Amino acid sequence: MKMFGLVEITRSFTAMNTNVEAVVCVPSGGEKQAENALLLVQDIFTSVEAALSRFIPDSEISRLNRSAGQPFQASSLLFTVMTLAKAAAETTGGIFDPTILPFLMAAGYDRSFEQLVTQSILPVLEIKSRYTWRDIILDAAASTITIPAGAGVDLGGIAKGWTVDYAGQKLKDFSGFAIDAGGDILLGGKRADGSLWPIGVVDPFNLQENLTVLELSDCAICTSTTTRRCWRLDGFSGHHLIDSRHGKPADSAVVSVTVIADSAARAEVIAKTALILGPDEGMQFIHSQTGAQGIIVLNNGVLLRSEETREAGYVR
Image (tube, rainbow, N blue to C red; front, side):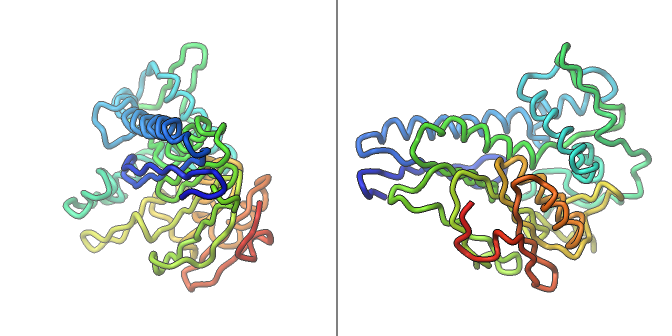
C-alpha cells in the first residue's frame, strides 16, 4: 500500500507453529531497508524457536528438561525468558506456571499441534509428583537454571510474546510497524495513510468473524482461547490452557480473553490468567494490572469488557 509518500512493506512466514506477518511503513524508496528489517524479524523468530521449542529434540529447552535435577548452563536467551516466566508466575499467584509441561503431556499435547490427531492420551492421574515455578532455581552469577528431577518446563506462549516484543524493538525506528504472530500482536506508530491499526477481536464461536474491531497504536494485543488449540481424542476433550491448580485443561466459563497491554509477553500472560480464573476473578485480575484492558467472551456468548474497550474504535 502506498499513500502520502509512505509505503507498507509486508513479510509473511511460518514460525512457532503459527503464521507470522510483519509490516513496516517507510518512505517511497526505502523498500530495501524495510525488507532487510523484516528479514531480521524472521531470523529472530527462527532462532528463538530453535532454542525454546519443546518440540525440537535438540533445542536448548529440551536439553534443559533432560537435565532436570542438575544445574543447566543456559544461554542469555533462555535465562532471560525463564526469568520473565518466573516473574509472571509470581505476579499471577502461580496461575501462570512454566512447570506445567507434565500436565500438557498428560492432556495429550506431547507433540506439535498438527500431529495430535495421530496420538493417544495419557491419563492425568499417572502424574505422581507436582513441582511449581517456585522450584525453579535461577543463578544469575553462574547463568544456570535448575529444575527438580521429574519436572519439566514449557515456555510456549510467553516465549512467543517475548519474541514479538524483541522483534518489535528492531522496528521501532520506522514510522509505523505491526507484528502479528498467531494473535500475539505488537503495534507501533500508524499505518502508511496515517490511520491507526485496525485489529479485529475474533469471535471464538466463528473464527471467520470479528466481534469488534479496535483501532490501536503503540501497544500490544493478545488473545487466549480454548477454541483454537483444542482436540478430542480417545473420548477426551482437551486444550492447551492448563489450570495449574489441578493440572488439567481449564474449565472456566470463559472461552476467550483479549488483552491490551504495553507488551505482548505481558498481554499474553494476563489473557491466559484471566481465562483460567473465570469471568469475575478474570476481569478483576485484568483491572488489577496497570494499563491493561480486556474483553472476555463467555461460553454462553456474553461479552464482558473493560470500560475503555466498550466501543469499537477504542484508542489507547
